Image 1 (tube, helix red, strand yellow):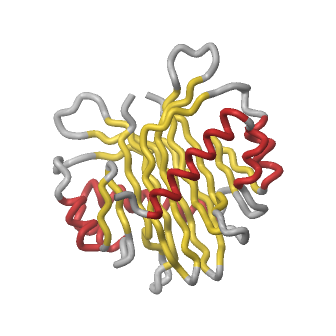
Image 2: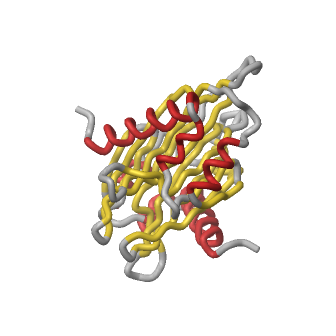
Length: 127
Length: 127
Protein backbone atom coordinates (compact mmCIF):
# COMPACT_ATOMS: atom_id res chain seq x y z
CA UNK A 1 0.00 0.00 0.00
CA UNK A 2 1.30 3.41 -0.90
CA UNK A 3 2.12 5.57 2.08
CA UNK A 4 0.40 8.95 2.50
CA UNK A 5 3.63 10.84 1.87
CA UNK A 6 4.13 9.00 -1.40
CA UNK A 7 0.59 9.81 -2.49
CA UNK A 8 1.19 13.50 -1.76
CA UNK A 9 4.57 13.48 -3.49
CA UNK A 10 3.23 11.76 -6.58
CA UNK A 11 0.18 14.05 -6.76
CA UNK A 12 2.38 17.14 -6.53
CA UNK A 13 4.79 15.89 -9.19
CA UNK A 14 2.01 14.86 -11.57
CA UNK A 15 0.35 18.25 -11.13
CA UNK A 16 3.64 20.16 -11.49
CA UNK A 17 4.65 18.56 -14.80
CA UNK A 18 1.12 18.70 -16.16
CA UNK A 19 1.08 22.46 -15.58
CA UNK A 20 4.63 22.79 -16.91
CA UNK A 21 3.74 21.04 -20.15
CA UNK A 22 0.33 22.66 -20.73
CA UNK A 23 0.18 26.08 -19.00
CA UNK A 24 3.59 26.98 -17.63
CA UNK A 25 2.59 30.38 -16.20
CA UNK A 26 0.17 28.68 -13.81
CA UNK A 27 3.09 27.01 -12.01
CA UNK A 28 3.07 30.22 -9.94
CA UNK A 29 0.32 28.61 -7.86
CA UNK A 30 2.83 26.06 -6.52
CA UNK A 31 5.30 28.59 -5.09
CA UNK A 32 5.29 31.14 -2.25
CA UNK A 33 7.32 34.35 -1.75
CA UNK A 34 10.06 32.43 0.13
CA UNK A 35 10.39 29.76 -2.60
CA UNK A 36 13.66 29.16 -4.40
CA UNK A 37 14.40 27.57 -7.77
CA UNK A 38 17.86 26.51 -8.88
CA UNK A 39 17.65 25.63 -12.57
CA UNK A 40 20.88 24.28 -14.04
CA UNK A 41 22.84 26.05 -11.31
CA UNK A 42 21.08 29.41 -11.59
CA UNK A 43 19.10 30.43 -8.51
CA UNK A 44 16.02 32.68 -8.44
CA UNK A 45 13.80 33.52 -5.47
CA UNK A 46 10.10 34.29 -5.15
CA UNK A 47 6.99 33.53 -7.17
CA UNK A 48 7.53 36.24 -9.78
CA UNK A 49 11.17 35.51 -10.57
CA UNK A 50 10.62 31.74 -10.57
CA UNK A 51 7.67 31.98 -12.94
CA UNK A 52 9.62 34.36 -15.17
CA UNK A 53 12.60 32.03 -15.26
CA UNK A 54 10.44 29.04 -16.18
CA UNK A 55 8.59 31.04 -18.83
CA UNK A 56 11.84 32.21 -20.44
CA UNK A 57 13.39 28.78 -20.92
CA UNK A 58 14.50 28.36 -24.54
CA UNK A 59 11.69 26.02 -25.51
CA UNK A 60 7.97 26.63 -25.73
CA UNK A 61 6.65 23.12 -25.80
CA UNK A 62 7.93 20.14 -23.89
CA UNK A 63 6.82 16.87 -22.40
CA UNK A 64 8.10 15.47 -19.11
CA UNK A 65 8.21 11.69 -18.79
CA UNK A 66 8.68 10.51 -15.21
CA UNK A 67 10.89 7.50 -14.46
CA UNK A 68 10.87 7.52 -10.65
CA UNK A 69 9.47 9.49 -7.73
CA UNK A 70 10.90 9.03 -4.24
CA UNK A 71 9.26 10.84 -1.33
CA UNK A 72 10.23 11.09 2.34
CA UNK A 73 8.57 12.91 5.23
CA UNK A 74 10.27 14.77 8.04
CA UNK A 75 9.04 16.56 11.10
CA UNK A 76 10.87 19.25 13.03
CA UNK A 77 9.64 21.97 15.39
CA UNK A 78 6.03 21.44 14.36
CA UNK A 79 6.63 21.50 10.61
CA UNK A 80 5.84 18.30 8.73
CA UNK A 81 7.40 18.63 5.30
CA UNK A 82 8.10 16.30 2.42
CA UNK A 83 11.14 15.98 0.20
CA UNK A 84 10.53 14.59 -3.28
CA UNK A 85 13.17 13.35 -5.69
CA UNK A 86 12.28 12.84 -9.34
CA UNK A 87 14.12 11.36 -12.29
CA UNK A 88 12.81 11.38 -15.81
CA UNK A 89 13.28 12.65 -19.31
CA UNK A 90 12.28 15.79 -21.14
CA UNK A 91 11.10 15.65 -24.72
CA UNK A 92 11.59 18.85 -26.72
CA UNK A 93 10.16 19.69 -30.14
CA UNK A 94 12.55 18.84 -32.95
CA UNK A 95 14.83 16.81 -30.68
CA UNK A 96 15.08 13.15 -31.56
CA UNK A 97 16.31 12.03 -28.14
CA UNK A 98 14.74 13.07 -24.85
CA UNK A 99 17.04 14.68 -22.27
CA UNK A 100 17.47 12.93 -18.92
CA UNK A 101 16.87 15.10 -15.86
CA UNK A 102 16.68 14.94 -12.09
CA UNK A 103 14.72 17.33 -9.90
CA UNK A 104 14.01 17.70 -6.20
CA UNK A 105 11.21 19.50 -4.41
CA UNK A 106 10.96 20.42 -0.74
CA UNK A 107 7.26 20.71 0.03
CA UNK A 108 5.91 22.60 3.04
CA UNK A 109 2.25 22.81 4.07
CA UNK A 110 0.65 26.07 2.91
CA UNK A 111 -1.84 28.06 4.97
CA UNK A 112 -4.52 26.89 2.54
CA UNK A 113 -3.95 23.28 3.57
CA UNK A 114 -2.10 22.03 0.51
CA UNK A 115 1.65 22.01 -0.15
CA UNK A 116 3.89 24.49 -1.91
CA UNK A 117 7.44 24.10 -3.22
CA UNK A 118 9.77 25.87 -0.80
CA UNK A 119 12.80 24.50 -2.66
CA UNK A 120 13.08 23.32 -6.26
CA UNK A 121 16.31 22.21 -7.92
CA UNK A 122 16.63 20.95 -11.48
CA UNK A 123 19.56 19.43 -13.37
CA UNK A 124 19.93 17.80 -16.73
CA UNK A 125 21.90 14.55 -16.58
CA UNK A 126 24.50 14.54 -19.28
CA UNK A 127 25.51 11.06 -20.36
CA UNK B 1 31.63 34.82 -3.47
CA UNK B 2 30.23 31.55 -2.28
CA UNK B 3 27.27 31.86 0.03
CA UNK B 4 27.37 30.32 3.49
CA UNK B 5 24.76 27.71 2.58
CA UNK B 6 26.81 26.64 -0.42
CA UNK B 7 29.92 26.31 1.73
CA UNK B 8 28.02 24.11 4.19
CA UNK B 9 26.48 22.02 1.41
CA UNK B 10 29.78 21.49 -0.34
CA UNK B 11 31.59 20.63 2.92
CA UNK B 12 28.92 18.07 3.80
CA UNK B 13 28.99 16.49 0.36
CA UNK B 14 32.79 16.34 0.22
CA UNK B 15 32.88 14.76 3.69
CA UNK B 16 30.07 12.32 2.89
CA UNK B 17 31.66 10.90 -0.25
CA UNK B 18 35.12 10.86 1.30
CA UNK B 19 33.77 8.68 4.12
CA UNK B 20 31.75 6.60 1.65
CA UNK B 21 34.83 5.85 -0.46
CA UNK B 22 37.32 5.27 2.37
CA UNK B 23 35.47 4.15 5.54
CA UNK B 24 31.81 3.52 4.76
CA UNK B 25 30.83 2.42 8.28
CA UNK B 26 31.73 5.84 9.64
CA UNK B 27 28.91 7.40 7.61
CA UNK B 28 26.83 6.61 10.70
CA UNK B 29 28.15 9.86 12.18
CA UNK B 30 26.14 11.84 9.58
CA UNK B 31 22.73 10.38 10.46
CA UNK B 32 20.37 10.54 13.46
CA UNK B 33 17.65 8.13 14.64
CA UNK B 34 14.99 9.97 12.58
CA UNK B 35 17.06 9.87 9.38
CA UNK B 36 15.78 8.16 6.23
CA UNK B 37 17.64 6.80 3.23
CA UNK B 38 15.95 5.82 -0.03
CA UNK B 39 18.52 4.01 -2.14
CA UNK B 40 17.29 3.08 -5.62
CA UNK B 41 13.72 3.13 -4.34
CA UNK B 42 14.31 1.11 -1.16
CA UNK B 43 13.72 3.03 2.05
CA UNK B 44 15.42 2.38 5.41
CA UNK B 45 15.12 4.41 8.62
CA UNK B 46 17.54 5.10 11.46
CA UNK B 47 21.31 5.11 11.86
CA UNK B 48 21.67 1.35 12.21
CA UNK B 49 19.58 0.32 9.21
CA UNK B 50 21.02 3.06 7.00
CA UNK B 51 24.60 2.10 7.85
CA UNK B 52 23.78 -1.57 7.30
CA UNK B 53 22.19 -0.82 3.92
CA UNK B 54 25.20 1.19 2.77
CA UNK B 55 27.61 -1.48 4.02
CA UNK B 56 25.79 -4.24 2.17
CA UNK B 57 25.82 -2.63 -1.27
CA UNK B 58 27.22 -5.09 -3.81
CA UNK B 59 30.58 -3.36 -4.18
CA UNK B 60 33.37 -2.90 -1.68
CA UNK B 61 35.37 -0.17 -3.29
CA UNK B 62 34.10 2.80 -5.20
CA UNK B 63 34.95 6.35 -6.09
CA UNK B 64 32.43 9.18 -6.32
CA UNK B 65 33.19 11.96 -8.79
CA UNK B 66 31.06 15.06 -8.26
CA UNK B 67 29.76 17.03 -11.24
CA UNK B 68 27.53 19.58 -9.53
CA UNK B 69 26.34 20.59 -6.08
CA UNK B 70 23.31 22.86 -5.65
CA UNK B 71 22.35 24.02 -2.16
CA UNK B 72 19.40 26.05 -0.92
CA UNK B 73 18.45 27.20 2.58
CA UNK B 74 15.01 27.35 4.09
CA UNK B 75 13.66 28.52 7.41
CA UNK B 76 10.39 27.47 9.00
CA UNK B 77 9.19 27.55 12.60
CA UNK B 78 12.69 28.17 13.92
CA UNK B 79 14.42 25.45 11.94
CA UNK B 80 17.01 26.60 9.41
CA UNK B 81 17.76 23.64 7.17
CA UNK B 82 19.54 23.12 3.90
CA UNK B 83 18.62 21.02 0.88
CA UNK B 84 21.51 19.78 -1.24
CA UNK B 85 21.25 18.30 -4.72
CA UNK B 86 24.23 16.42 -6.17
CA UNK B 87 24.97 14.95 -9.56
CA UNK B 88 28.03 12.92 -10.36
CA UNK B 89 29.38 9.56 -11.35
CA UNK B 90 30.35 6.44 -9.47
CA UNK B 91 33.39 4.44 -10.47
CA UNK B 92 33.31 0.77 -9.49
CA UNK B 93 36.20 -1.70 -9.61
CA UNK B 94 36.28 -3.68 -12.85
CA UNK B 95 33.76 -1.39 -14.56
CA UNK B 96 35.11 0.49 -17.54
CA UNK B 97 32.44 3.20 -17.50
CA UNK B 98 31.41 5.15 -14.41
CA UNK B 99 27.70 5.15 -13.52
CA UNK B 100 25.88 8.48 -13.45
CA UNK B 101 23.95 9.22 -10.27
CA UNK B 102 21.92 11.94 -8.55
CA UNK B 103 21.47 12.29 -4.81
CA UNK B 104 19.74 14.73 -2.50
CA UNK B 105 20.30 15.47 1.16
CA UNK B 106 18.10 17.38 3.56
CA UNK B 107 20.39 18.71 6.28
CA UNK B 108 19.13 19.80 9.70
CA UNK B 109 21.25 21.35 12.47
CA UNK B 110 22.26 18.77 15.05
CA UNK B 111 22.38 19.45 18.79
CA UNK B 112 26.18 19.36 18.49
CA UNK B 113 26.12 22.39 16.21
CA UNK B 114 26.87 20.67 12.90
CA UNK B 115 24.41 19.24 10.38
CA UNK B 116 23.06 15.73 9.94
CA UNK B 117 21.24 14.14 7.01
CA UNK B 118 17.55 13.92 7.92
CA UNK B 119 16.71 12.78 4.38
CA UNK B 120 18.93 11.09 1.82
CA UNK B 121 17.76 9.83 -1.57
CA UNK B 122 19.95 8.22 -4.21
CA UNK B 123 19.24 7.20 -7.80
CA UNK B 124 21.40 5.94 -10.61
CA UNK B 125 20.68 7.74 -13.90
CA UNK B 126 20.30 5.22 -16.64
CA UNK B 127 21.05 6.61 -20.08
